[in-house]
Length: 204
Image (cartoon, rainbow, N blue to C red; front, side, top):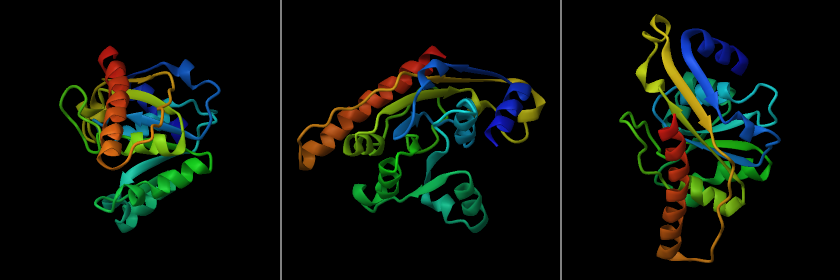
């Protein structure tokens, strides 16, 4: 599926991938983090990873509302999506992602948590940072620019610009903190993640 998507993007958009050298030799466990401008960002991410990469399959964290729709949910599961639940506590919301990383898988999270169609990058939620700190999995930052400019009706009508950039993988460093201090620490580490994404986005 991903090679076909990559070919479609090359034909119908001015498609560019930067930083692919950062993917060489990478394997799971790994957390991919990216900004979120379009409902098709997951496709852009999958298409931008080289077909023979050891990073496949990539498992995408997706709002449980979409996963619970009978037909849509079945399709999303077939391409590697898994649900994240809101208002159930951090432990429960990260349970599936944690298990995947413990199995050596690659998980993709968009820390903004929802579409942010304005220019720039929104504040991130703490889930990706908490997951990285709890599992020790390294983080691969990436940014996507241009996907918000087209939809199902306009995609085939003009060669819109779509640019994707990967950054160097990095790790967060755990600290012994509890209670409110732990939440504040997760927030601080989230800021580091979002700064990495923003630097890539601004350079596109």
